[in-house]
Image (tube, rainbow, N blue to C red; front, side, top):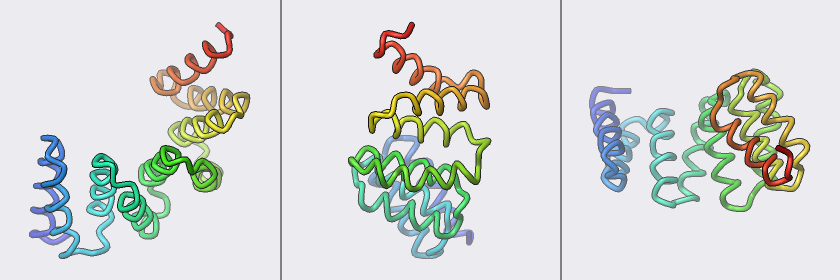
Length: 157
């Protein structure tokens, strides 16, 4: 990241924290013009585009990050969640299963795949995934909440 790229990127981060997402995208795009394959800038653009409801650009940015850094779990999870939100559970699952095989110690991957499984009607497998996330990260609030919600919905208290 060059100095000017870094300045634009940092300004974009500040604007994002202030909720000024459209302005942040402008800064990130300037940073990207100076450094077209910077995964930090691409990831920030993906997150901001997703926040603004721009699913297709967000997907493109996340895929670009993963092309550069295939092991970047945050980008993979964000992409999987974006696909899930857009009714593409099969696509999310296709991303998550190999990633989980390569990163079995990632509670976040267990949680995310559990959520995909739950949404596609496989509650038993989802429960296994949520419980595995909790084994890896015992106080993982999202996994606790998802498991409790799922069990409450089934009447298992």
